[in-house]
Length: 66
Image 1 (cartoon, rainbow, N blue to C red):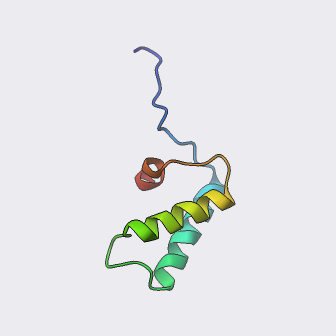
Image 2 (image 1 turned 180 degrees about the vertical axis):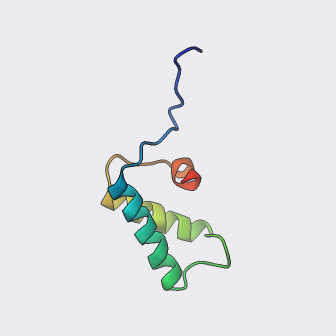
Image 3 (image 1 turned 90 degrees about the vertical axis):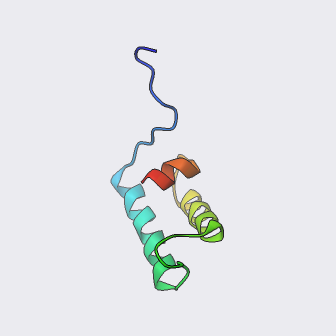
């Protein structure tokens, strides 16, 4: 479809990127990360914490792609 944009495309502002990175750093510093990936519980923790700090809410795939 011409002119159609994906609804899954996220617009990231600098503040949201900073929050996202801070949350990931906290998870790694608190030894909540397993090896090089986040398991389901850590992902849910990260998503919920990020949602509390920002608006609009991002989907799981948007956060995963960041």
